[in-house]
Length: 145
Image 1 (spheres, rainbow, N blue to C red):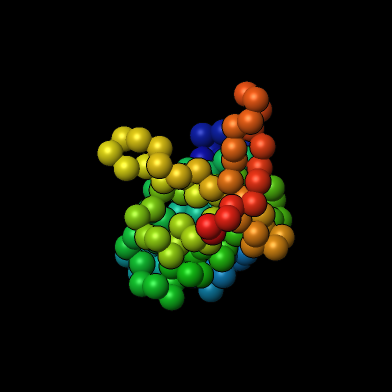
Image 2 (cartoon, rainbow, N blue to C red):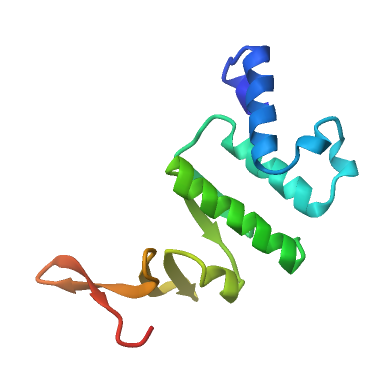
């Protein structure tokens, strides 16, 4: 549907849908209705729908909330792959501490206040935190990762 609203011709919409569903491991389920899919498969379809128009940013509210842990891990792996391969940015809201730990940056709020803003260098997994020094934000190694 997002491609239809964007005025993309039917043939190109179908090709993009098949490409995305194939990339998300759903090629065997192309003719199925949503009620015939598992929760994890439905979540992958939602990811494909969100990616249809090649956005640069995805806002994901509890993307694994209704999934079992194994399927949740698969969905997060797919999102990470898309970030790496397509330069996509995913902003994810979650209450799952283990899931948040997988992020490159963790921003935590409590009672409407920012209590943590921590960057993690993805290449080495080295935790970094922003520190304001002379009105400039600098990244420094966190002494207590």
